[in-house]
Length: 280
Image (cartoon, rainbow, N blue to C red; front, side, top):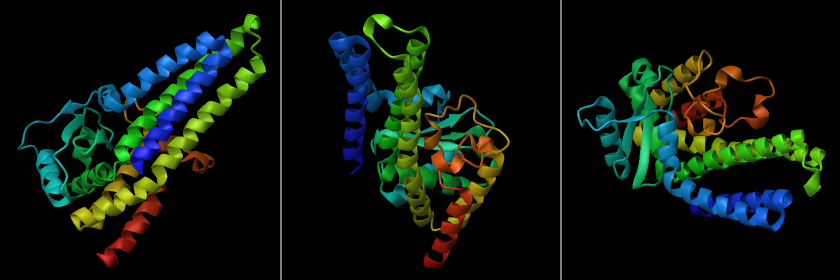
């Protein structure tokens, strides 16, 4: 199912690029847009994970004696997954995400702040959450959605620029461009929200079953949420926010945030984990 979602997203991205290219540049614009979309699709599938890790200056952990390495190794043994690459992001704000296109090409990244803040059982819960994303192929759709959202933002900026300076030679109405520049980012937000919300609940449940200890993840989520309200991960972007275990922009949420929330509320996630305790 996740592979089907990926194909749909990449196809829609191609159609969107071609439509905007044709609208702005006619047949030549459509051809150029098609070639650009093809290149972006290839890049998104094979290299978007490396792009995201590089964006956050993640450093790979290869020391088998490192605490995180040991935790990951034990959990992948329990879950039957291949060993993913492990990265530490040199940032004092605690958070984590997983990325990659499949089980064999996956990575888990945690910030230094997360390692400083949480105890071992809480770290285990967070890593199990990310491994659950990997197990259910959420990382592929999530990483491509990040690239997709970035592409839409680029198109929107281009349309805004064109609307401001105009181009009467092509008969492009500035009002239409302004409307598209507003609508496209909203569409990107809805796509990210749809991709992320339900998957977070499932990853929480998967982590609880993997560790047999919902309390560890509950405690971790509570701490991460409180810290996220006071600061955000350096270089964090709206396009990649849905990939993190806790929204890095929690401190900026308003009463309207629920409309485009990429994560369920932390209170709801903790409550669902509480229900799992009785079952487990």
